[in-house]
Length: 127
Image (cartoon, rainbow, N blue to C red):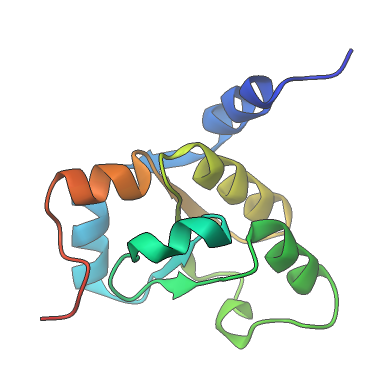
């Protein structure tokens, strides 16, 4: 029987570590962590987290790039810590689980996504 998106998200959430926007700001201060924007292209007009890799093709295309020949050099080190975020937090859990399955060792999901970030008035520019 086919699973719903809710089923996939629920399963992903059981296998990934979620972090709050506040925890991500602490991670950013420490440096060395890749912040990966996995929102869909039409969501990018809202801006993105400071220092995040903005991927304008959407996450499925990025997954294909990682699996095949168009590898992004910033994702070459599969031991680096990665934090995924999206609009509301669900897609980031799926992205984190996918990256884990692809061999990335330390992948976190931002629990509340972009909406949680801007709802707390956290910075979206380098000032």
